[in-house]
Image (cartoon, rainbow over all chains, first blue to last red; front, side):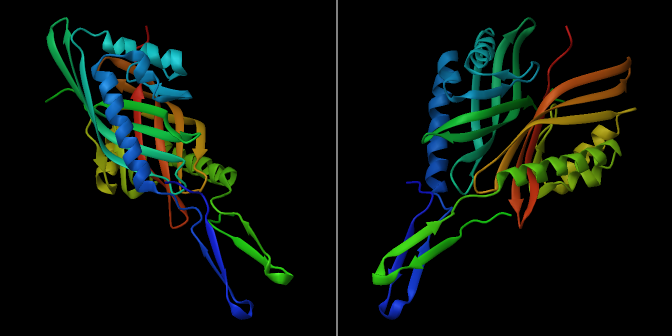
Length: 157
Length: 157
């Protein structure tokens, strides 16, 4: 449960007023679990190669900042980036959140994680390992991706 | 001014209690200006090639996720990444925030921006243009970088 402000006041005999205020607190642990649950569903869409479903996790004004390409903003542009990834030959992508941190009012969160992408390149099977940051924002009670950026750890030495 | 919770109660005659609650509000416009000011100082450190000063903008447990390298966590590792960037021959780096969004309680913010890096490679002058996301968190009243990630827009076609 998330609440922005809950104030309880007890009026004691003689006019003494005790006020308990839970303001600016939110159930950030529950929000973290909600976001981790969304990640699981998102991973399902990714592993199904469903670009439209993947794009559905972003806010309407959200952005995806892909390595090797310009900023994609909005559902159509984000869908196109996912189509490009899923269009790679034998593309297999998985990602793993390592940290989800929720702001105290429960309206913003950031996630750090790692990914593994394998595909068939012109010269044979290829693998890319890297990391990402996703910023989430709550819109009308739902967590949506505000922005999403990733990069590669680089060629294996 | 930032405040987490300010509750004013007025006890009227007859025991009627009116409570005004400003909870979960913060002066996010002022926080945005503070962060943009920090970016200006940070840019000064970057343009001076000062790795230690650049690393000083991060939280002690903050992270830098560089393109082409593993996650750097903590001041020493972050300083080393900046030393690597500044160690490139004739490295010139500039960055420009395009969006700074502050969470309602004023404890978290995210920034999206672009960068331009020029340097002398083995084959001559090179230029890289890309984008970044920085997540800020407030620690004891000061905004510090929680995580920082960037990637290239890719080779010019």
